[in-house]
Image 1 (cartoon, rainbow, N blue to C red):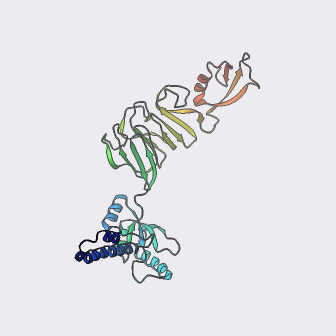
Image 2: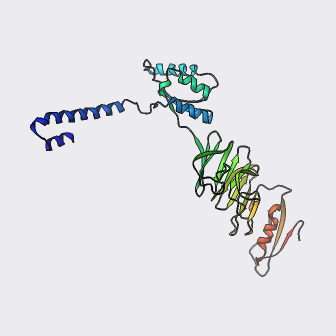
Length: 338
């Protein structure tokens, strides 16, 4: 392209050699730059600032790094790489690194180090070829209407975005454009319109944010910091203004806004604390279940004999309400209710 420009705009005869030399210098500079860029082997670790790595390990307690094993000029052959791996790990203090990963024959080694392990690594011959290995790592994400939640692999929960009702959980109503830490030891998270739910590793369920329709489940008002709602929880979900929790015993619980029956308890009444969802009361037990006999209305016969079913005692009243008004049934009889 440059030479085409020279042909079309030759200029005065005395200026052509100077313009030609200028074009030649520019072409050579581009060629050398591309060659230099190609000197980095695919997948090779790009050196990272030691200060940046120290900042990460100070914040999280550990940092994942990737090391180019070819840092010392003498390392070339595959056998040398194998020995280099051993030399590198031997140079690190025992107990201060883990999660060592390396593909067979690869010149790149990934491992996780704490403060002492990072210091030792940065004093080694490979210090100039240490790169960050994908930190911080996230394992769970959730998004509400205008706020976001993320759980790091260390179990810390972070939040950012809209915070009008304290849905970030940082004890303020200040919107955050960068993540703030909320909880530790978190296993799962869910976000609603303006409320948030989190299960900790011990199975306890925590909630915070907007509570206008009881979607936090603690029977009170808005909370700007997490409050405990349930124990023994395995999974959680958040709707616009209602919440659901699956307990480890298999029972399903719901609370919050219920004008269209979103809670599944057989009513359209809001609930400020968890109520069992009809039909999801968990596994049957001798004390929880009641044998119920339903007699069919002769005026609206059905094929078959009267039904004998099992209804959880906790939802028996809801089941009776469900049957009310249905012309197929005339009488509900249980072992202790007529």
